[in-house]
Amino acid sequence: MLRLPSLDELRREAVHTVKRFPLTLLCALVGTVAMLNLIEEPPQAQQNLLLRVLLTALLGVPFSIALIVAAERWSRNVGRRLLVQLGGAVLLAGYFSAFPTNLTDAPAFHFIRLAILLVGAHLLVAVAPYLRKGEINGFWQYNKTLFLRILIALFYSHVLYLGLVIALVSIDVLFGVNIPGKRFPQLYVTILGMFNTWYFLAGVPEDWESLEKDRGYPGGLRVFSQFILLPLVGLYLLILYAYEAKIILEWNWPKGWVAYLVLGFSIAGILALLLVYPLRNDPNRRWVQTFWRWYYVALIPPVIMLFLGILRRLSDYGFTERRYIVLVLALWLAGMVGYFIFSKAKSIKVIPGTLGLLAFLISVGPWGAFAVSKHSQLGRLEKLFSQYEMLPEDSRLHPLRTAINSEAYDNIYSILNYLLEVHGEEALYPWLPEEWRSALDSASTVSQKLHALLTLTALDSMRVNYKELFYLVDEGRRRGIPVSGFNVAVFLMGSNWVHTDEKNITFPIGRDSLQIQYDLNHWAIQVTGLPESSRQQTLPLTSLKPWLLQNRSLLTSEEYGSTDMPPDVPTPEYRGKDVHLRLHLHSLNGYFVAGDSVAITDLEGTLLLKMNPPPGR
Image (cartoon, rainbow, N blue to C red; front, top):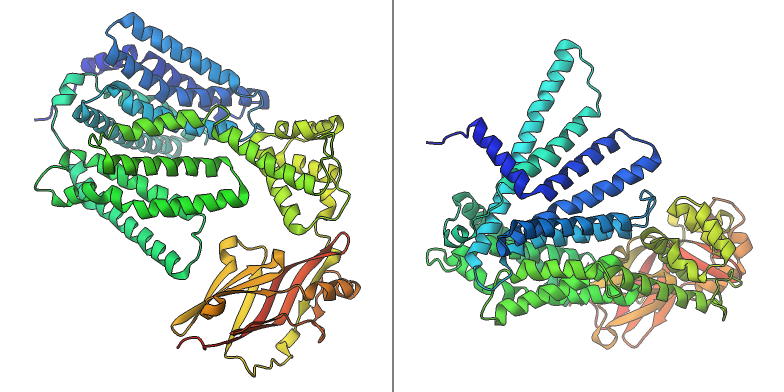
């Protein structure tokens, strides 16, 4: 029969938890108090200080737990354990001092680094007591206990919060006691920061020998892992394989966001394998045995697809923190696949151990995510500036003196925005004259700093002037289209403003299909799926450029208005051995920029195709 603990037992357990985790509970208390004060909306200077305290305390909770359980495991000397916690407090103080005083407007890399360190600290909690070889069962039981304990702690915390909220609302309604709205988030922070943390810490294992002997496996966890999580992971793998087959059949590059799906599904599968680890050799769990044996082999094609996707993005746009992390995770995932396929040990401790180590390594140093990403984007920016003679021999940035095409302008704009937002204007200081630095320092937000830079560099003048926009429309579709000699007609609607993936459109034609890729920046339309002799062909739009420049004054004479498409608009055309392409335009939008430069942003038209042999046969 279940026996409820007495108040005296609860008191003793609470005191024992304080003695065991003093640094952790201190971090929880300090962080809770800081958050309570932030909810009160103090002055800006105080907000910055409180935010620095809160973020340091947030990292301090898992970091101190890892230090304490490691010290308990490897030393029985109480003095040494306290010394370890003191060292942890010194490290946290150093981390606190590394934050800029004005954290509200600080570069985003401070917060990205905190997120990475939080992941590393939580993974350190998982492996800290089990750094030596062996004791795999104890390691699994320890982490199983932590996993279930945090779920129970969160459940109790939210039930307690809901109950107290109902009580407060009842007092407000029944007795007319005015309870300010901010008290409810403060109550939530208090429960989550103190009660939840305290309850969780009280259940952290400390009898390491009994953990190794424990062979228990919770029934609820078995049902969840075996009959819910594993089938879901299997479904995810089928989706990835289907998408990979689609890529091969259409011979199309994988979409950028597929990297996140591959990583998410793969890590979910690894988590599922960790949860069913004790069942892997159970003859009554054949499904688990099969999954454990073949999962990492099944990951090989998705991992290859992951590398193709991220390497293409890196080739096109260079490193950012996000792409760096995806690449590191791809390498880690490939390492795990190789380890669990070829290694005899197959220790599950390797999974959180290596991932946690990587988290700490990539957050600092010249090899880390931040240094590599900044160097990569500065390199791209330097190349663009040099191309337009904005960085002469004195290595100081000069205003733009020549016309710049829209693609280069967009690239410079996005890189500057990234550097200012993530790394701050200090990343650009080596190139900036003193007066330009002062102008940036006087701006408070990223958008203001970016606008100042675009103005100082004269790039701002390259923004589209509404008087220089043109809109050509075949109103009412009055022009007839001669189709003699063609065997396929498709309607096109392309835009240069949409996401890259949406510029690729597939048209089914019988058993075949055509893929149209809009590349308006380069005045071209790519057509794929043509006869074998010309499988892929480019329909050039360059014939439109001289006509647009010649008629510039006519096309831009009506501000915000549209111009009926003149009959002499060129018809882009391509003739090949087995292919004849012709585009009849229905609308054409774009703008003129400095000098004799023009860009198109949108078009609609009917594409006529003659193919030999005809499609669909």
